[in-house]
Amino acid sequence: MLFARYVAHPDPLAAAGNLVALLVGSNQPLYPLALHWATGADVTGLFICFLSAPCFLAVPFVARRSSLAGRVMLVLVGSVDTFVSVKVYGQAGGSELYLGPCLMLAAMLFRKSERWLSYGLIGLIVVGLVGLHDHYGVSFLAWSAPDYATMMNFNIFSVAMLTALIGLSVGRARGNG
Image (cartoon, rainbow, N blue to C red; front, side, top):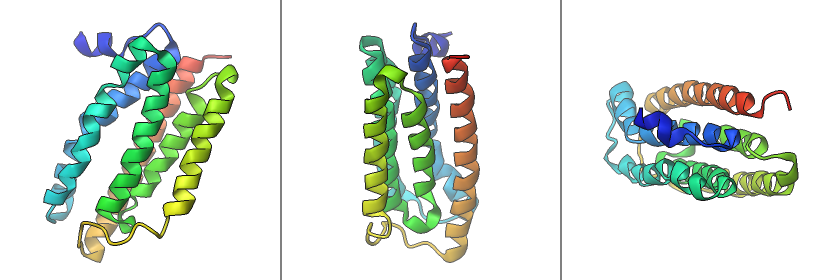
């Protein structure tokens, strides 16, 4: 199967990161469509978020050259995508919640010998969150409060599922060590 071969990597942490990257990247085009289906609101401005899909889908390619570079790329692409999404969608929709899985990846995808890199990535995400929270300015959307509430519920569920996937795949990759 092509998917399994693209995800596969001799480094179990890279393989776990590859799986997460492909699932997120393949779901990027579906997210605005799901929001439109759930809210009926105009989502044409949301297609800017498609730009991150090729970056997520390229993580396994990069990981083939360097496991560490692929894992760092996943954390950085996920974080930047989240910050851009908050600007596009607006804070009221709860897109900042996706920083939780980004922090989890930054904490779990790295070995003890790579801990300073892990700490640095965690620090960058936290600095971005503290610096940007409530300072994104006007979003590209002008949705109603009920539409934003629907989006928040959608994001809460999505973040919970993504967090579980990360926990299972990276936890399994880390093994008992």
